[in-house]
Image (cartoon, rainbow over all chains, first blue to last red; front, side, top):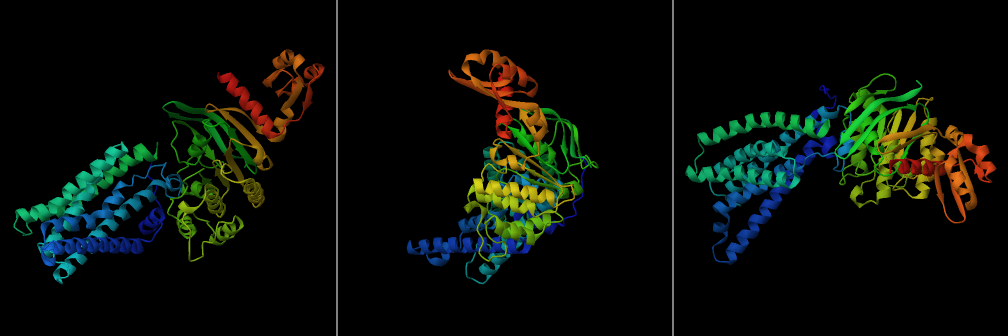
Length: 229
Length: 295
């Protein structure tokens, strides 16, 4: 089927598919992730304090750098789980809107931008909180930069597994692959002794290239197997 | 424009079910009912018409001008609504109003608000909004109908719009269909599916009967009522009568069913009572015959 151009701008396509404006939704999701993260860190630090390890030591640990990754990538992963099936609520409505598949593709691209903004905002706030000494993280700002890079890389890598047809297998595989790549943000810092280096630059470059490739491959596959059929 | 849709050799193959080949024309300016049992292919045909599902073969000409369901012009002219899950469950009236405004040209927020009030599902301008997930199935359908009727379209295609509605709402739906068609200058049409035509007869001008993925009968309701007769009789002459009838049910005392009107004289000679069927009786007779033929 030929590719029709949608007259709907990508920000409107995002609003059409999510029901909410890009700015409003992205900021809300980021703030929610930050709130969840702070609650969890304070809670675990409080427990550690009770157990005698001390409040600051409870926060300033490698484990918490892993935790920050989980909260910083939560909504990025949740967006990946959505498979846009015809049978899902709204599935048939979205297939009848003007612009058809091109509108869907624009919304898909907007969701990548949403992921990028959420990652940047979340880890920037986490770095500020760490720098201010409120919730100090191991490796500080470098830890946040490394995490952000690998979360951004994890999204396209995991998205290739969206092409698995079995729902349960797809969700499990995507989640495992996603967090495997995300955890590399912490592992690489441990291996480099807390220094940002070529591996992080390479990961950032790979994230950009793979995002472009996965967008093309995953959308083409979705159109062939789930939209036009 | 005589026909709003010309459907030529449409086929859709699934594992275990094949729709078609379907050949039909949907008349412009009328309300057409797709009638059939569950699994007859009504939803599949509607989905193919609206571009929700791809087709395995054939073509559809829309409004005498295009065969491309994917074009924005056609999408803007067709008001489609599925039988369930039409919108995401976490949406409310305000979100629906906003998204419909983006999704289609000619969506009127004021008309949507008016219809929501008429159908008693709330107000999209109110601050406090109820999510669809918290609404009953009937109210969800009312919201879907308000959304689709608030668009400036030429054809409404509705999948089982009456199935989750209460009798009063079904009556209102019939009025809305009539109002919609009257609102155009003969160029607005409605196509809807149903497996229970009783409450929708008032809203039906043309009927298409489907069974096992095929069209088994179609025509204007008034013509079909002339073509077929409803027959009742005493059980003593049932065996002779049965030979002249298309569908037949009986017990030890009497029988009834549908026959072609051309057999009226012969059936009367068998002391059978013959009368004009209503659409519900016609549907039962035609679908029962299809079921029997398929066995």
